[in-house]
Image (cartoon, rainbow, N blue to C red; front, side):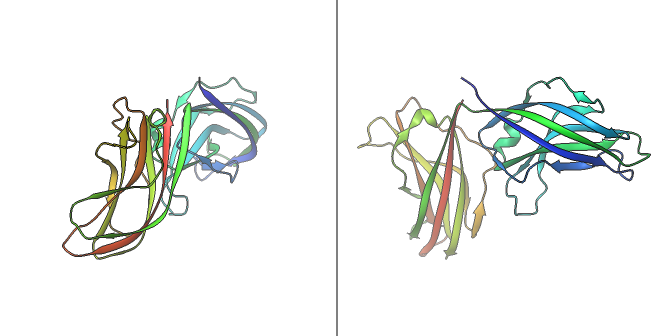
Amino acid sequence: MARIVRFTVRGQVSANVEDPSSNGFTRASPQALPSGPIKQARVRNRVTNLIGNLELVAMMEFWGNPDSGETPDTAEIGSFSNATGALAPTSWVDVSTTADDNQVAFLGWDTRNSSGTSVSTAEVQTDWEIELYEGHRVVELAWRQFIAGSTSQIFYPITDWLPADDAEMVRAVLELASPVADFEVQMGYQITNNKASPGSATAFGSAFTTAGMNFPAGYVAPSVDGKLYIRFGYFVRVTSAGTGLGGVWSKVEMVRN
């Protein structure tokens, strides 16, 4: 069964004479939504007190890291319109690919001045419907300090065993602190039907050697192979002979369609 969440946002928007093609994103609320569970969205706008030639469209703004200064991804929900009053709902727009590649989403509008002859404004209320993946679970792997003395990857399981059915797709945020001497870390998982005798571990995502927060490029589908249980941990190694160490923290998101 689909999971639907609903939000109503209100604001005043404008478009400048200097930029008739697009005025850019107007954020409706400073509150961010986790983007990982989002599949698709649709809206219904109510536009009043329109002055000038303003056109607007509801928009979602996606950030991998809102504090990085990067250029966000955006998705228009519907089409630009200068109609007023209570408008018909838009069709559903699939934003799952963009949402998967980012961490948070903001709701708002894009505007433009269709003629470019004057500044135009309007007041708008937008009712949002956002469909989420049926199952969404977040598992935090607490800070651990590792010492690595081999150039071969060694897996260290961290989480408890979890239902594998919850992990149709997974992704992870990973932070590496104070790596020393070519220390490398990568996320991994194990699957099994028998917790006392798990199979070999599988790596996912990228391997990291540089200190900092590392965000996923999107979800990956684990090879669950009909197994009952899954657990997550880290592969660690040094990339050249010697002994390395580093502190690691991560957060794994699991979703089920």
